[in-house]
Amino acid sequence: MPLKKNFRTALTGWELATSTEYQECYNLFGGSINSHPDVLAFMQSKADCNERYYVKTAPNGKLLGGICVWNNSHIAGDIEIIQRLNLLSLPISHDEIILPLSPELKTLLPFKTKVLSEISNPSILNSSQILNRKRVICLAKGLGNDGYSSKTKNTRNKELRKFLEAGGEIKNIAEFSPESLVDIYFELFQIRWKKYPDCRKETIELLTNLKSIAFGSVLMLNGYPCAFQLVLKCESQKWNCYDYINGGVDTSKSKLSPGTVLLWLNVRDAFMQCESQNKSMRYSFGKDSAQYKERWCLHHPTGRIITL
Image (cartoon, rainbow, N blue to C red; front, top):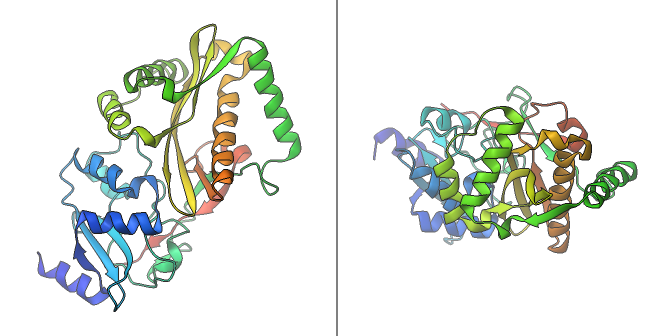
């Protein structure tokens, strides 16, 4: 192990650990999809990430948090290292990282990221949201009292009824095989964006090996898929994360607004799932890269770790 790495981790109290210990931290404290142990293992199987796991413990040996580091420089999943390792085309979000850390933990972290979640930010003493160029992610408002207005909810429900009355169907993604689901995704994506997404084989592999990670519905009209959004999900004790990766829609059916209808359905179902489990919902639309996100989301800041 390089001397520099020994010095940095010894100085800040992080100890080299196993992937099993990291998973234990994730089970205890939760995280995001891109910090989930199984998702990390999937990404690490696609590139030489030189992954290392570290944990922080209390004097009595109690686990206080874990991190995964790539190439001895960045928190695993950070956008910079994702680009360097040519993992950008994988259908996994890199807009926010929630680390599996105890709320009690206050520590220095000697590795880089510019997408540290607001959940993890209070635990990291050398993190800053102010010095992060106002980077934000867009999280869906939800259906509670502080969420979408009554007018918006009524409008969305009218659109849903109109779609169903026109012969539309809602099918859970569990009704489709990973291959069929990816075929639907690719075809509708191509109709909407005039190109196919990347990594068909890897997307099938992800949905095959991590079946519980996919979430949402497929909209059908006259027996054919007309809207699909690739949404990935992971659960923690206090929150569930949903990452809206991308989607496609049959634009010839635009009078029935299937894209909007499906977006509403997926957010509504995620909110109801979280409410039934007494958890908060983090339904991410990613960066503030499109005007429509303003209607659906609120901005939440991300932080950067300031380190040498």
